[in-house]
Length: 114
Picture 1 (spheres, rainbow, N blue to C red):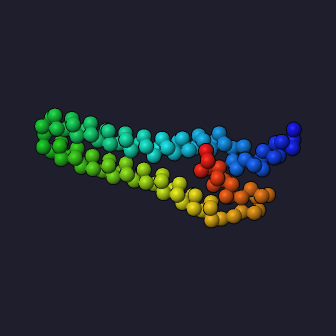
Picture 2: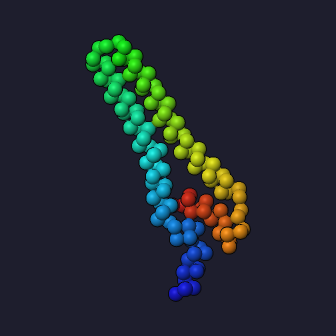
Picture 3: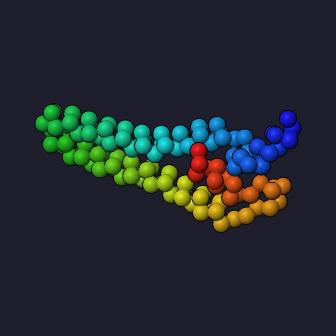
């Protein structure tokens, strides 16, 4: 039985941490998509309220807020994408032989396959 566990640890790129990687990737996806959608939705609702109130100052303020929220939404989306890309580049480019054979390329495979 111990030989099977050792074999599994050698062939599994996640080394038993697959469920944790899945949760972390789910949180990243939630941050990447849900937060920008919520920001744009709330900005649109604020702009709609300002248009209904027919106050020119409120409409200008709501437009400014909506533009800022679009910028924040794009920044959040691309920051998560950029961090993921940089992490993959670093993991692919660095080999770490000091961790008893646990190289960063196996972690990169784990992240990409889960």
